[in-house]
Image (cartoon, rainbow over all chains, first blue to last red):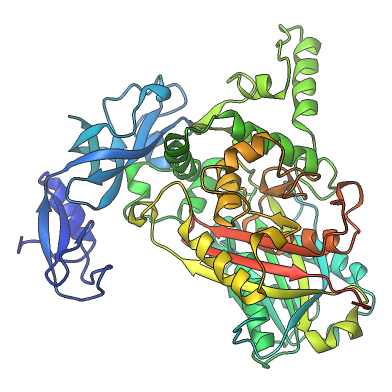
Length: 138
Length: 423
């Protein structure tokens, strides 16, 4: 993964080509996402960038009826709510993302433990378009 | 004190609060002056010339009022220049951290007398802009882009908590009902009405306008109806969320040996702890706040006290789930037992563990930077037996404050004790 650096920006650069990157500690083996130059487990600085499978499990979620400005601009509101959650990746680390293709009209029906796969989401319109991480049920 | 590195003890000798609410006519300095005047009135012998430094907790006057560098302005506005001033920003924990930093400065021997303030003036901005400003207390690189809002973060924690402990949503409503019933007895509270009176006034308004009158049987029925209580971020509803608020709070901290020169009724800061953490995905658990547990552990250790010794606590109920988690992080209840305790009324004024007798952030209001200092004001009143109608029975002697920044990236816990002169 030589094409990506430890700089935060490269996490999103990787997403533009549908890649989810993290870092792997060559000393203790810990996996971290997004990528970091210092391992939070052993505190060593011997880390490398790795590509992750994008598969994971839903750990916590909410259905948001009063959206953030970014999500309001993407068309969400109280009548069109969206789901966002924290996902535990199969490789171990956790990350936040919008959860697509779940029944937001019945939040009680959304199950913690649901198997998910990553997807990418474009937001911001033509001028400020940026790629974001999302997940959907397998 | 056990194994404390503090060179000397610290006392609180006076507190002051502005009214909390939404005040078009007031800016942060006006609110601060209001709280400062309340402080002077609370004290027996105050001499402003003795104040050696000013520590201010303020989250974001830069965003809310387009005014950064607020601490020297406030000091000047009450005539305290040229004393050194410091502004502390730790999101919603700014006030609690300011208390702790002032105490550390006194314990070090650098200062004998420090004024601590907390202020936030949030209601000038449109609500969408307030939400954006608050979101900057989260990780704006990796959490906010997921679509999270602050209610959303705590709602996700609530989903993890409910899943792990099979908790009922009604528990959240009980926290809201309890805190409003306390806030109804607090003249400084922003929403000082009981949930029942809010419900009745909604019914009355419907009748007045000739609309069908909702048939809510009780508070739980009302809170369970999205028409009365809309969903913000499932499972957090409007009445699970603390409001957007303007307000200020102040406290005067002095070295222990000087306490009696200022007041006959000091309280003593006997334990203090603070901890930090990464964003939600970086944590082992989402059903508790590890940094709060760690801050509590430090504070109990320093005070040589345990959770059962705490007579009352002001905890950071920015959302109702946060209060339930706090009562577990602080050891008042076992993990997973906090929600049941809330339903059973154990955290009510007359319960085993009174929590948020002031009304908490939910009812009293949450002017972010003022919150942690305002919590100390409530503990002062309760320990001195001057909390009026909301006074906790049984002559409380030990009170705790728990102040959380973000979703637990900063947590600070302080423990205060009243010592009887003859004891």
